[in-house]
Image (tube, rainbow, N blue to C red; front, side, top):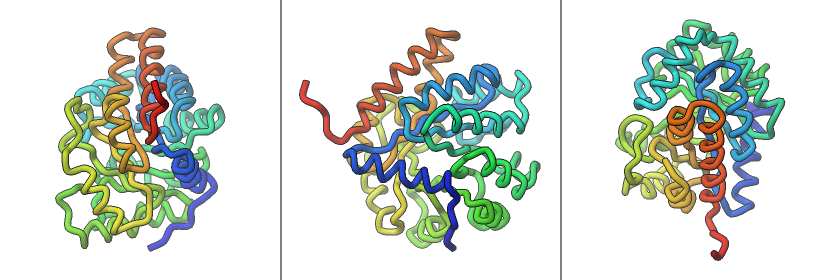
Length: 276
């Protein structure tokens, strides 16, 4: 099944090509809309986008099964502050207007199904997003979303598990667009330990099944790990580590700390380091 990407989706493809030409991995920064408020989240993402090739805009959800305490706390705060679906599209549009970063939306399936997949895809494309990541949507139930994404020129980025068979991974990759999301560690987001020792082999395995870029996330927490992952992955995704800076120091100090980390991550994803 092939996708016909729209302009924003093509820009995501070019972001990976540009990063590769510069001998680095693309950097993706995750941030949930509405944390700590809708207005502040948009401003924070616009600032972080100056150091990233891609921003993953999170749609707050009450049962985020893939997320650890850091993102759970942020999305809970966003929901308590009154986040609504319309705020997602407003945020995507504002980010696209203020930066050159491509925008992907990370969401769970229930809010998309409740909103209507066709309507969600249409509004997402109109706002300028390149596509969506829906980690809890199994391939067997993905038909309505894939049809909607294809109709509106959106990429669908799957989160794939290393314990899946090659046959299943190949089927998932065949429906994907933009990139493949490979977890850097087992479990939920926010891990601060080492990357999984089998991650390089898993990325190599995925390369035998797809030509799409492979990005690693869920567990990348500092510039050194970003540099490590960039040696074999096409993209590096960081979310919880950035959010922790803001949660630990609410206000301008927190954003400054997050931006300092984002700059370090942007340096870290280069495959070659400048001599000290």
